[in-house]
Amino acid sequence: MTDETPNDLVLERVLNAPRAVIWRCWTEPALIRTWFCPKPWHVSDARIDLRPGGEFFTVMNGPAGERFENLGVFLDIVPGERLIFTDAFVPGWRPNGKPFMTASIVLSDTDDGRTDYVARAMHWNAETKAQHEAMGFHQGWGTAADQLEALARTL
Image: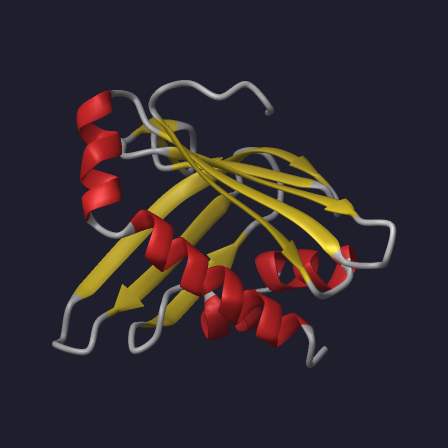
């Protein structure tokens, strides 16, 4: 997943935590609820069925009572290294009526025990990419990555 298209949004960081712990934070529902969206938003529910076609579900809640359910499936999993998921399908490989993106999370070790972290949001068209940018992709995903790193350092 290194090919970037004009409709991708990418966040690249080196996280100060081991890759195995970052993986846990991405794949354990109790952990994902603590970091997945920028505070004061929070995740009230998360379900993860870690297999291709398995459910990836979160409910994000905003400070003014906003509630966003995100339902999709995993497309590809390389344990400890890569997650690819999409909202283009829901469990049972049923098409979603209005897909927003496919995401990939790629983790690799640095020489000093930290984690190279690449999060990529791949959109179907320029309009959807622009919508995601306007929603605050860089700030939001960056803040979530900071929260992920902080949590991982406690585990």
